[in-house]
Length: 188
Image (cartoon, rainbow, N blue to C red; front, side, top):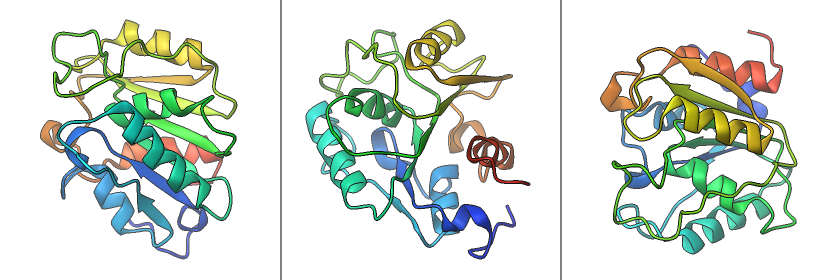
């Protein structure tokens, strides 16, 4: 990615909303955050044992402290946090980029995560995009499509991308950054 702080994406206040384990040093969320001075991570007390209410409270505090409605860039369990947050706060966000939504009723969902089911069936009051992989072990394409439909999100399916993280070889994930730019309507 050749984006510099002088480009339009860098000027958009953005919150990185990681999933369980907090997105490590080679995860595209971390790499994007490092390249944009106004982007910041929503920090959680416990990255290994998520508790829905705590994670929602941390997201809400980060949104409320933003000088303008921020963009949310969520991965995995972070997507569920955004879905549970909608309707629990009067705070505003500009849009949400939701990647690899996990199914909390699926066989691979982390047993350490508490309170993430049922997934809210509420339409988001802001534009959003759900991005899903055809071979994500944590959530199927039909599940991701249902979430996108209920949330009023646009949907993008990508072929054989695993969980769309560092472990599945995505690194800086330039194709994902291009999708984010499209969502924000920022020319490439």
